[in-house]
Amino acid sequence: MADDLLEVELVAADRKVWTGEARMVVARTTDGDIGILPGHAPILGILGDGAVQIRGEGGDEVIAAVHGGFLSVADNRVGILAEVAELADEIDLERAQRALENAHQDHDDDDEAVAAGQRAEARIRAHGLAF
Image (tube, rainbow, N blue to C red; front, top):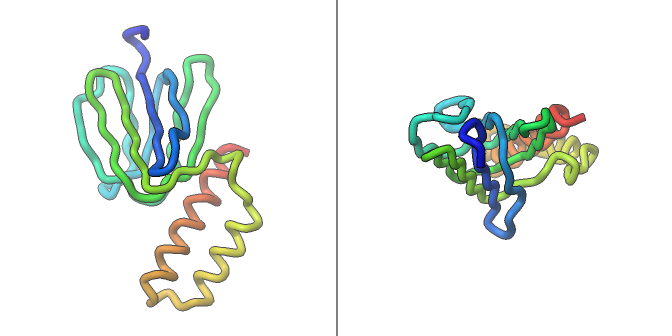
């Protein structure tokens, strides 16, 4: 691996979603969005529901919706371990929009409805970034 690249692995609880080299990774943590470039200081963060953007060497981009988990950075290696992760091209946009509508109808004061709404919003955002 070249010194100016990151080695990235995106893993969900049930599968390896993506692995490869990248110039930059952007992820949403519970403390806010974070951008990671080669040479980044080591960190361990808790992922929030949101989109992860992985920008490859040739300008290609991998975008995934992630729901919970952890992000670790050390020695130009980025590990993203999510409870659930979906690549943007795997997301059914109409289904995500219906899920968001259903979550709002199920009352915003219900914790499960709020969590379902956040997952749906993450899917919609990831899909929108990719297409």
